Image (tube, rainbow, N blue to C red; front, side, top):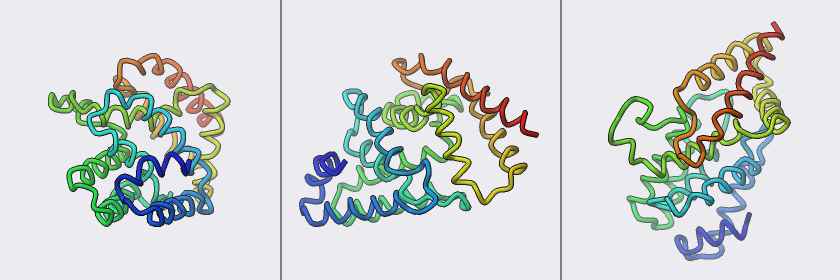
Length: 215
């Protein structure tokens, strides 16, 4: 991952030592105790999907930066992780002298992960053209459409991150989150990803059923 990071960031920060130090800091943050899912493996997974769509992207650099930074701040006891991650990205990118428009776009994309949707789902005509937002959301939700074994490992990792929450409360909260996803008219925005829908919905239903059976 270091080579991928250097290829993206060195043209922006222009100082190899700064680039390496930033990478070490990211690794430490994503390697914090209690990160069973929101770690570097997740970042690599998101980046792989983002890169597969870069030919469609309007701002490829901002899109990839958002992927790197979007979970840099993560505490399951808080409800502002996305905002804090966006703020961290703004600070670092601004220090490097990244153009303000690119900094703002990276932060905006990070903010989308708070609800995993653009205004498209609210019926906004303007949001239909949010290609980079759609790429990013699809990449972050790609885990939902993976093979059952991989999905189950993801669900178990999420439970580990919320180990501080009692079983009954976790089942209730998780079930609510799963229902919110399953009740959307669609989970994935890009036409190339529409075939993910069936697998994602099947996984969501299966986990929800398991949660209800545990009561």
